[in-house]
Length: 364
Image 1 (spheres, rainbow, N blue to C red):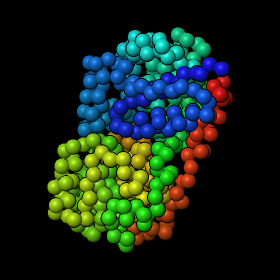
Image 2: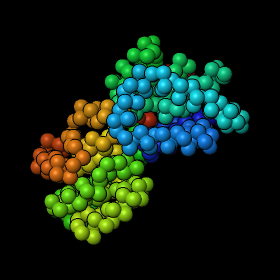
Image 3: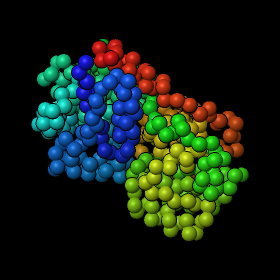
Image 4: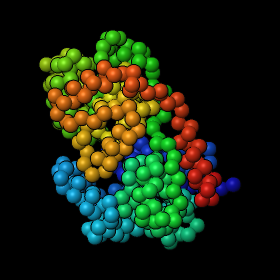
């Protein structure tokens, strides 16, 4: 039997989409397929790629503007959002033709909204190609939903309702939220603390906010450490934030700074609580079995995701002020019995349910 090709379209805004793409690729291994993951932003071409990332970073740094664009345009598919979508799809046509020339896909799986437009366009030209999107945000905005998408994989009932608000007859399946395999294999708390050189009886918090380190993390980290917590503060790819955390660690010995690191599963395992903005970090913390203090720092889709995390439980929300965050964290630590989460031991549910959903559209 000829090995089938699966093209996974991700997006480099943050690291969350690549995490989902990686989990999907692992889930597809038993189907004897060859997968290739491509950054949809790179398919926009040099100028388009640079402009797209610049626009996104600018919006993210101006919460009121991002909220206006998300809720006024993206969520319902306003005129400006539709123009962006059409322009992105047109820009991807030629790169997709070139990419698929020697890698004709039997399935295109998009885990990023820009990729969804490209995948739907390609499938319209090649009717034998199956198309699916995997949406881990709690609510799908309009640019996720295209007529030529065969299957919508979502991680909440709320998102399923959002998809069907645009396409009432759409095939939508709710599956578990994926997490990277290393989080399922995180060490025990005592072992993790030994590896990191932390006191066995300390109160320990992980502090992070996505790969870009969004929000006043340096000020919050220093305040938490001054209050007596050991703070494992992760700057991600934000070099400026990392320098500030290093400087703060010279004043507060309990503050341990990290840049971009692959030790996050161990950091979470060593902690009593994870402080984070809404996003894939929240699901990783739940896999390890740690309660959450959520920073309300990501506008637009971040606000929707934050509310969903609160709905899931074992989480509180705090404004990104050092004083308020410290009080919220102490509240969670004082009520640890109520916030105790059973760790998730295996990614099998996600992988099995993803394959079953694809089988329903003939890809098995």
